[in-house]
Structures are given as C-alpha cells and as structure tokens.
Figure 1 (cartoon, rainbow, N blue to C red):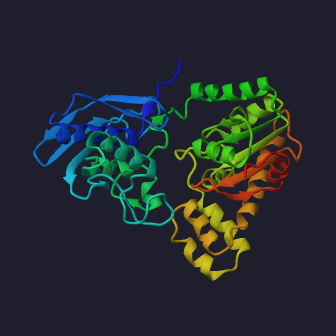
Figure 2 (figure 1 turned 30 degrees about the vertical axis):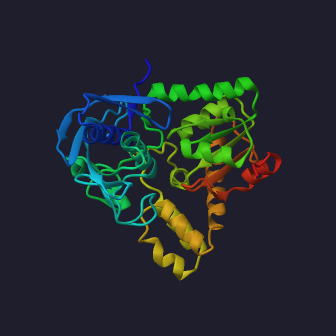
Length: 370
C-alpha cells in the first residue's frame, strides 16, 4: 500500500496567506484555495477560518502531514494580511511561531523562524493577488505552536516560542515506514538497469541539488535515501555496485560517526557534540574554540570554521565518515574494497565544505562543472 504524502507548514502558511489576500484585495474570502508548490504539485485546501474587515483579513488552514509522523499534523496555521504603503510584501511570525536566538540557521537571529523557501512561496502567492504596486504585511501564527515547538528540536536549536515554518518542496513525503524504504530502492534498480557502476547516495534535496551542480553526472545516478543510510548501503551491496559516494550536509552525515545509520531526529540526536570534539582535538585556536559552545547547529559551526580559515578540518571529518561507512560495509555479505566509497559534505548553500580522498579521486576522473 502506498503512503499518502502531505503538505509542509510552508505550504499551509502560503495557502492561508493567499486566501487572506484574496479576501482583503478582492473583497471575499474563498471556501477553498489553491497554491503552487516548489515541487510542481498543486496544493488545494479548505479555508477553515475567515475574518474580513476594511483593514485586514485573516484565514486559517489545517496542516496535513499525510502518513508522515509529525507533531504539527492537524494544527491550524493562520495568516493575517494587512495593507502596507511600503509596496513590498513583509512577512513575520506571530503567536506560536518560534524566534531564532542563535546563529547558524537559515534565518537571521531575531527573526521569525520562517525559512527562505516558505517566505518566497508566501510572497509569490500574495503578489499573485496584489500585483506589483500594492504592499502587504503578512503575519503567520499557530495558536498552539508554543506547545508543539517544545516537542521538536527547536529549543535545542535556539528557536524559542513555537514551531518553524519550513519545507523546500512544499510536500511532506513519509520518511519512516517500510513501504517508503521499499520505494527508495526503485532508484537503485533504475541506476543498475541503466548500467551505472557508481551511485551517489544523498539524504535529500540539498544533497541532490548540490552534487548535480558540482559534477556532470546523470540525475539517475543520484539516489535519495532519506534517513535510511544503513538500509540503503545494504541495498547498494546487494546490487553489486562497485562504488558509492555519500554526499550531503554534515549535520546529517556526521551522525554516522556515532554509529547512527538511521539519522531521523526522532532516533538520532544532533551531531554538534561530535563535530566540536573533532575540532577540539585538531584546532588550538581560541578564537574558534571560544565560539563553539554558543553555536546551536552544525551549519553554524561550519560558518565559524570558514570565518577563521579552518575549514580544512572538514576534510578530516569526511575521511572519518568514510572510514565509518567502510567499517559498516565490511560487515555486509558483499563488502566494498577500501577504495570504493567516498564522502562529500555540503553546506546549506550547496558549497563543498569537506571531501574525503577517495571522493576527490572520483571527482578527478569525473567531469566537474565549471
């Protein structure tokens, strides 16, 4: 049985904002609203709450996570739209939307935890209604968001007071069911059928986009694995691929150094402590070490390393991850030879921040994009 996909908090906030904009600028709030998601899939949903006055409009839609276990499933996401003389679409968070208090996230300190892609989605949807000449102020809120936020990793990330509005595709795909694991194998089977001897395993969209921007390979050679690293490495061995490249954000892949080959946040805690320990063993700079304990994310730690010209330590991190992968694969029925795996680490912008020797050797014989 196939699992039902759902829609991100970003899609729901966008739908609520569009419905409210329609009410304020067109005079009547619709019963249903439809938006375009970055994945190309349209999202149509009912408008559950409507309030319209001369100066503002407010609407709500219900979050539907499909068959993915998500604490925000079923919550109501509100958007209030007011006219603005600025000519721009201003977006902020209200009740139940977390505020960023630590550096290293995609959103600057002090701002509402509404990530860049949802912000773009909201702005585009509202502009679709207002046109380019009218400004609007949009405030997103979730009445029970503060309680829900405490059930996520937000407090540990320094996001205080509520949930985050997130999502890069607009779609929630179930991440932790056997049926979803089975669906992931289709990509490997296609790659095998085409005749590829090397596959690149990526946790998600960031890794896929980054590797395809870096090197000129077929998209069919890049396989998304979600959080199921061990499961997919086993599957790679079963299909007798000769080489595997693991590519993605260090916040996800460093977890392997703890032995967590299932990397979902529900079963694997953040990897900050692992990276900090490696840095302390290899870097003596007080300017770097003094900042480590105040950074809430691996991305933030990487930014510190960049600023202090110490990013080369991430190559050692990649080497350590590669060694851990080799140890894992050596226990399988078809163990890889020591030269047949590699690791590439990307930051949130898609830039390469760490690479193992074997991965570099693979890049050297593969056409890198100029």
